[in-house]
Image (cartoon, rainbow, N blue to C red; front, top):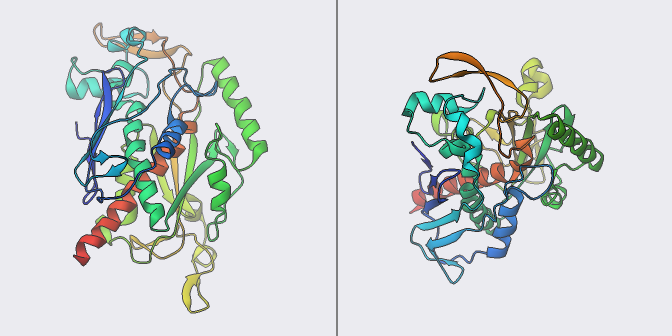
Length: 364
């Protein structure tokens, strides 16, 4: 199972949802940078399960144990290695799923690809639990990028059909996005947060789920970061983001809404701002030809409803080769998008840091 990405900053993850531990290795991090461990723990807490009644009640501390690469809170230059212990597995809840796959889940495809010995307890290596190591690596990347004047913040653009207040893609209110980071529902509009809370609690009662859209903004990026054709900013971001479970779509700037409009409506007109060239709008999302143009990078990520719902569903028995009905057990999120915001921030930070490493390598 391939579980790595990156060129100058190389990230790999390991483990399974109900194994002894999950973790990661990060190579290429710069030596001598102090990491604020308390800030990192606060970032990880945003993704961690069991924080409130809106998410899965699996309770995990998600505190990383650093095995190498950090000495006295400072990056040492050697590969960063860490693990996060799994302490709250209820594997028996998943016994029936070895024979009856969940609709729209990797249970079936994993079994067909790897055989009946594949560990799919709690989703195994396909589980969103594996996003915790991404947040460790990405949380460190966010701190390193901030030293370079680059900020990355996200929000829930949409949950179900409930939409947050739109952001200004030319001059995004980054402080407002930062202020909602610790909210259980990361929306700027407090009234929409209340609507989403009511929706999620109803879904929890009904045993159902819904999806959402996470929107991430990165400011402070230099002009000229990226490459054309198959190695652009969008290419690498999409590759890594689609490695996050439940992702079904990625768009930038005006996204798919632009596809039904005229060029005269969505083209980003150039203009002078003092002695700098900029644009009046940012429908391109800060990227043209795979290369940053100096405007904020704006990206939307579509997340499907979690397939682990408590409603009875139609499936098949793999052993009996016959139709059957499935009722699942376990602890699951009514809307996994709620905990996905820091994950998408983390992935975005890692990809951008990787591109900056490309430039440093070229200059050397």
